[in-house]
Length: 169
Image (cartoon, rainbow, N blue to C red; front, top):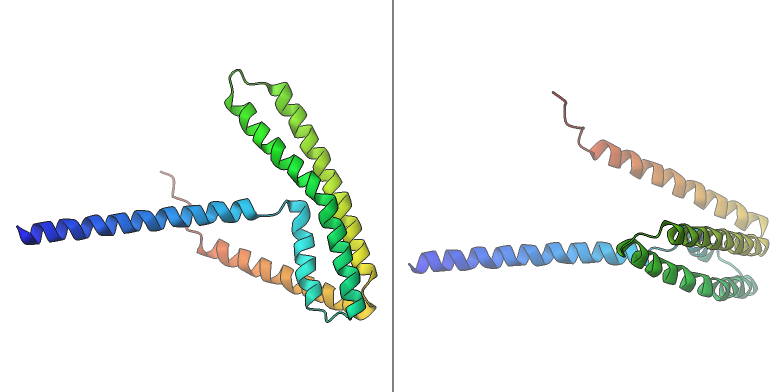
């Protein structure tokens, strides 16, 4: 009888621990997804990381910091508006009756904000590049090429690991 109770208790603890770990992984993935930047800002994040590796002079560092600070100030209200629009979209699609016109208007405004972000980030990239020497630009380009090659290798590995589709028949 003791063995049965002990075995049952051990199995219950194992199952509970596995379920808790699974929930943790799901929450981590959700948080990672939530923390992902807007596609328009991802390039800026990569540029910021790469520029730090270039060995900039103090004057260049200050100029680049000022460019990124200006970007942050310009982008903040746009991102807040995008988050509000996303919440509004969630409400629109869950209410009855479905209002396709309101969803279309919201989608159009999101498109305009994406365009605005692209214009702002492009200007910031150009301004940051203007502060670099020709050698630093060349190194930055080489970093980008290595990053692209690495990403392609990782995608190939992922394709190789993917199981084949089930056979029909």
